[in-house]
Image (cartoon, rainbow, N blue to C red; front, side, top):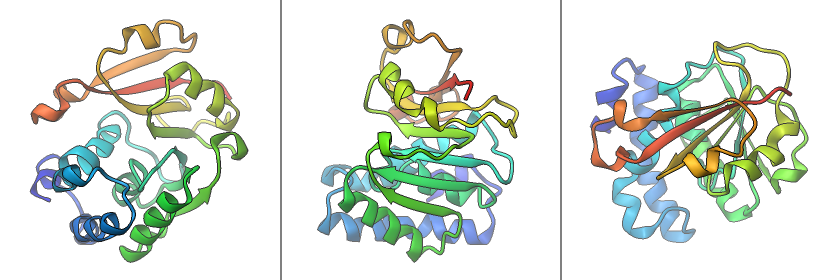
Length: 208
């Protein structure tokens, strides 16, 4: 929890309470339904919560922004971002029902009012959003093909609508064939922990 306050010192008391509750909630749920690698649960704040909040170092979403978290798993990056941006609406989608259940239960337990959930494949979600966020496991080009239909045209933020995903490693080969405007942000410039040495936020402008 100290790690979150180190980089986000201006949290409200409610936000601090919500972030602090995540460890016990995820530890408990993870013992029943594996959403985080068992050996990684002790690194929850660094590898999952702070990593998710890396997106907030790239964009400060304006109130009323609509965001879909695709492939949310147990709720990352959607739940940490929903805590940080209580005036922004988040829709968390995953194709695995058990994971959606964990994310839903965690959100309810901490009293998050700005999140909705859907158990479906990405292709089935037809609604429009300002941004899609993801801790992306699939190649960028494939992800863009799937979510292009979900990006709305009305602009509400400093950055144009598009895709914002968290990725690691060498991304030059992956981003080269992408025809859209793509910007890479190094999280090592924001967070000093070794874990973030190769982690990046990838922002792709997509005209809905």
